[in-house]
Length: 229
Image (cartoon, rainbow, N blue to C red; front, side, top):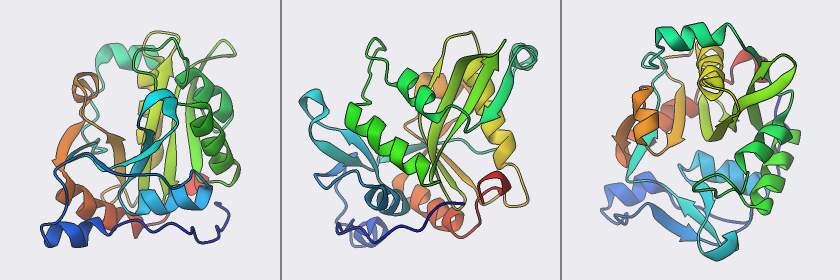
């Protein structure tokens, strides 16, 4: 069960109100600054924003709300026969190696890497307080793939994934979707930030910011999945 958090001193904009007033910028990056304290992160996700470094060496934090947001409806995950066969080779675990998953996702040798030491530290603190989680693929006792993100009510905001064995990250995603499929599945929201070509092949859709905010409001009204309550 997540620990209660003190209020953050930072105020995030009401994106729905700005959208209705026609004052929302047509840009994915909406703000910079603030901090990465647990209360700030949770408030940002509740408001429809997420952090990602903006600027050289990740020193400045940007707060993003993509004009077109990537989401994975739980009934749209494309599981091929080869993925099902691969799944038999792995054991899926939850929250047994969070820091190692983030470390692998932050590997500086990865193309397009963005996870800074500050991000790693902040999400580690968020995990210790019960708000951030990992889903992992293990093979022969070795961690070979996984993903991590933030769970708030019916929202799971995916941050990054990695694999050291073929299909290991896909199997972790299958495990996450299975975890989210419960009596509240229709209201749950699996957020992946942007729709990339790879994620689109798995069933990820791009939806407008307005639709995302509507889905987010519905998701925040339902409880966490049973393993995280």
